[in-house]
Image (cartoon, rainbow, N blue to C red):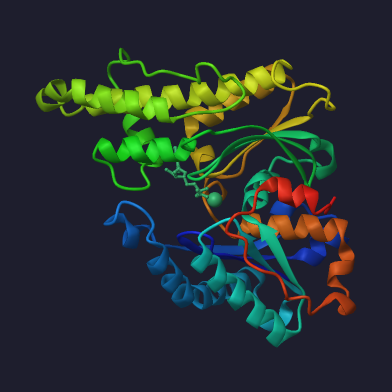
Length: 375
Ligand code: KG4
Ligand code: ZN
């Protein structure tokens, strides 16, 4: 059994995978996931309008042992027999990117547990976890048939379009020059009176829109190979100011602004993706077989529908994780570790146990994963 731990931002999370079934019996990742749990700190940070790093780190210290106990007891319930720490054969933990104090708490906890139990410890890149979380898709037939893949990774901190030749090899085709897509949802959503993180609430409001007359700008004038959401944010601020008299008359007008915001963000992401697929922004690589959508913003229904439609048109297999695995979770960290163990089973051998000497990496771009040559 593999225990995965995530603590890079404001969610303390743990997951258990039957890694032996995955590696030896050919079970899929979603069949091998035994239990998972998340202890969210959203309510704690809400009052501050964003995550307070120091508070978040202290919460992880308190929550991690509790959530680990919880996933062990969920696994015991599911299996009908006691699953304890003795059943563990490996531990995986988020090494970065993320908030330094939060990563330090998670990695120190995982190191302590691994040393105490004499188990291998596998550090995982949080972004790689998001990308590979698409492999938890229940409809996935075979992992081998999905690569190379294009991946749109959209979270609160990142907006990247990646070419993934195979797990461990990531090339960034486009990324944001300023705000991330999730950040645009959060910042404008906050101005609309919604609490942080506002993405899901913006989306819920947008569904109630009655009038679709408001339009926000899409795309980056001048530089086409990147995303940019700061212009959209400024335009949204102006729109909110201009619409104030209408909002006062009819508060439901905010739904129309939320709709305009969601449409503009989804369009900006979809158009760039189509340009890549048409070979306008990138060519020469082997044609992708599938399209992944991952990260917190992948929970957005309009975006999921738009990308499903594009994948269909370009004859790509479309993989998107279940809603609960879009935002930060530990199952995605477990997936990163399981997939790596498939490539490097020697990490489980006794002579490799004990290599606990790795740092946390608050900045850890996916290009570094590729250059470490883990493929
Ligand atoms: O991946 P994630 O949990 O954390 C980071 O690593 O950043 O992503 C969180 C982001 C937040 O910006 C949140 O507003 C956004 O995902 N989000 C959504 C939705 N659900 C979460 N954005 C749009 N629509 C949603 N349904
Ligand atoms: Zn994340």
